[in-house]
Length: 392
Ligand code: FEO
Image (spheres, rainbow, N blue to C red):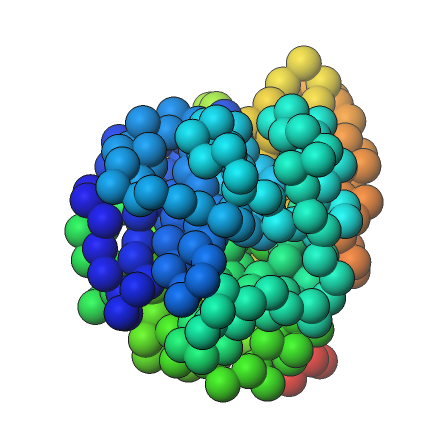
């Protein structure tokens, strides 16, 4: 898309990636994404806030074709989807300096080969002036790399938040107009990228809320004028609150685990516990990540393959463990043909989860009456545990 005006002398000059369907060769992007770059003209100086993914450099350079001079390139975050076009921008604007955090300096030199003498580092709270506009830099490490910062354009009250408050959502609208749509995309983004840093982000939100913000301009997805909704959603996601929900990621090969999952689902629903199921061979793993943001309990369902858990279960549990959700309880159900170490293997993948492990139900062959009784016992255990933390 062509440059779009946000306010007088402030423009979006980024790129919309309508067709991208995978990020980090892992994260599914059902709605594409955008790499937002912003150009701010001050009375004396001009600043570019972040760039775009290397694959979209030509679009950014085309959007800058009528821009005669850039003095500062603000690099909030060194990951390539925002820093990838910095070398090309520096090639065109010979006098431009890159502004980043002290940690960002090393990362830009390592990942983008940005020359050291082109980089100026700024401390937390430091400002630079564009003449009639002041940029204040706010360090926000671990959102989601160690060097990340955001910046506040004081006179225009715009917070450039980079990945924070971002959403992988390709859209022609500069500002969001359907909160349910952007909220879903933002929650997916938070789940897949930010959730492991929940505690740190909580502190950053408190710091940022003190600023008199009119507009939030993230580096992915739409901008926010009515930004309270996205801030409140993030406060909810980073809080310690969990919902009365059990998520069941599972695989079944010969219907045994499937019957167990079906029975456990009914048993939990009868107790007014919400269930979200993910049949892993056909699931969008991003949906599982979204559910991990709030759920109190995970029950992993697996058959036994070559004496261990099904590889898709291993992958899902490995990802859940890496995302460090605020789950409180976990259990394992499933089946085996003759023997196996499926339970031990799955437990060994949960070392990051601060969960209480509830006695699972792992059976030989197809489920019998006693196995269904055991699943009722597990559902009861979950109900009691949820009531114990006041969510049942
Ligand atoms: Fe959008 Fe962490 O890069």
